[in-house]
Image (cartoon, rainbow, N blue to C red; front, top):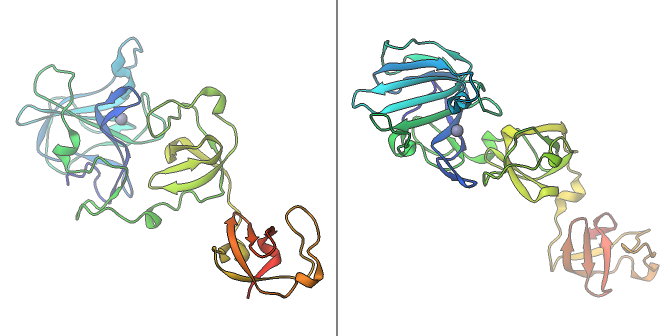
Length: 283
Ligand SMILES: [Zn+2]
């Protein structure tokens, strides 16, 4: 694949294509070990600028560098924190042209990378077809194009972490998170590559819109036991049913069967009663 970062791997954080009723004309990328943006082929710097006039929609790009490829196609590098080349310059493949940033309309540092045809069209070309970067959230090894396994790349959040969503957050389907949900505390229900499932909102949000406010408590060994339907268990001394009623002593020490499992509790088939995991042990 063509890697616009000087070194390291590439995380795809937002896809090329339909995004919540709009068409995202580029792909959003974050370098896993470099923030230095390079020319992926020999080209001419056509534009190196920042538009600050908000009447002009181009302000959304922040600091951007447009390279004109030798076949005339135009390659845009947006939201840079710094531009390191000037219009008119000739650049070589691999030459650093800027630093990744979050200028313009960006929430969190990333590179918006977009390809357009020769001329004055505002139409985009398929940046993924051009670059070989998969149009799929994930982290990709720039040398082998292999997708890297989730757990090695996503230590950022864990199930149970307390989080808030930052201003401007969008769900991964591209829909804007309503203002009243911003700044509230939520819980991570599940993690994926570059994104988390917010338990209270039943929605996925990209990591860059998420701030951790508290870390998940380490899992207790009991919780990792993970009873399954059909397991044989005994009930411990002092056990109570989940409704608070004490389990009669004649039921203690006997072998029972798990009929159903819910978070933190099991249904004992023979007693047709729920008991918390902490009162149960394997028989
Ligand atoms: Zn973008």
